[in-house]
Length: 115
Image (cartoon, rainbow, N blue to C red; front, side, top):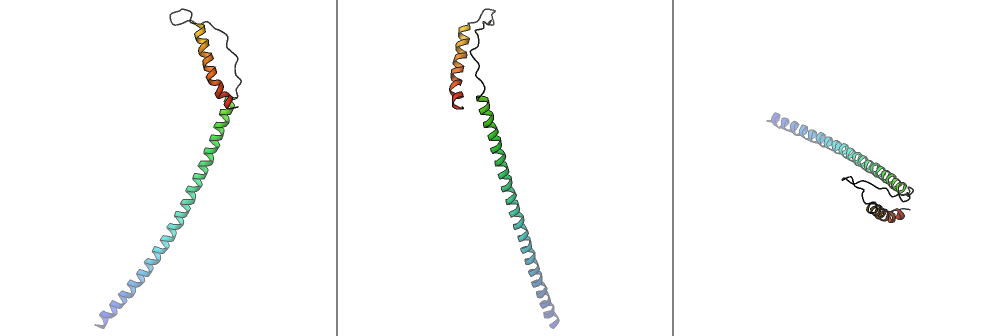
């Protein structure tokens, strides 16, 4: 019976060693995962910052383009041009000119706001 109790003791000792070794493996794996997780978080934050910087640069370029477009010289009034309607008859020049004038008056206030 002493052999049996000796074998049981040896198995208990090996089992305890295996448990300690596995616990060390788990700690090592946990540390490695924590480091990778922290690096991933840093990388995601860097990508977010880079994206924000690119977005701000693009927005700035768009705003600059908008300012340039609004700073274009305003053309003078166009001369009255007689046009032909789809029936071959001269169209009403006054109607077209009033529409042009209306469009210019709508655009004029927004043009003044951007300057």
